[in-house]
Length: 392
Image (cartoon, rainbow, N blue to C red; front, side, top):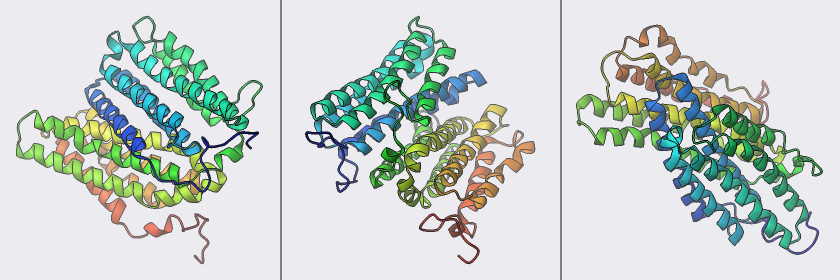
């Protein structure tokens, strides 16, 4: 409740839910970071290297997610919120530019870009809301700022020597994820009330859908850049076509009632709480898939190394798992069809290592095709997202 002054900064319930042009520009800047993350993952040759890339991907995603939550609760047409979006874009550029150099003495750039984005956002929000005498919203912003200051200590300390302390960075990102899941419990301020999550509008659903669609474009962007730098051979072009097919199939997997899920679950506040985590799993799947095609277009023939196999099969599988979790947590309906189709490409594991990479990717595309066209899609959920009864 507003304790005085004006609530102009806080989004009005009857306000427009459409994303602004600045928000769309904000998305494009972040998608560039994802493309670099995919390239780094393709170049990783160890489990530890892949884990490091995943940690940085999580930080990039968390910046986007928290900033988009900010534009959900506050009016993005207002100057302070536009300033927050611009700061987040600068932070994204800093994180993206430092990604390839994190392990070579530039870790502090990544840490400062990440921490600075969240701390500056909190300061701008608290200052603006204090001027408007909007006490409850100011307390909410203070909770967010408190926990990003706590994790920021670990982010900066883990990078200040120039060499990344991955243990400290793991603690830092864990603090960010767990504090959000626990609704930011803060000394003297308590936790974010559940009813604040129930204010979710169609704007949040639109934002997530827009970002996923843009992110899926990396599946074709990354291998296209790779093909453009080498020979334009027939098998490389075939791998590129396969990447395009997988991108469209994953798009179909995501868009099936995605907006309906986000909007229908809004009354219980579930999308605002679970979407960041389930979409992180999907995003990891997109990055893994883009990385796999970066490799496949480079060498579409020969045998498929274990690391390549994990990316080719694991990327789309992670995306489908994230989508299954999203459906389950928001609607409390188990999408059995998705789960059963998930295992079809995995049946090839005993033999796929001896197959050419292009054939393995074609098998994944075939499995996704079965997943999309198999009859019975309408049984997953109903328009009201209620559990289907036998007579439905």
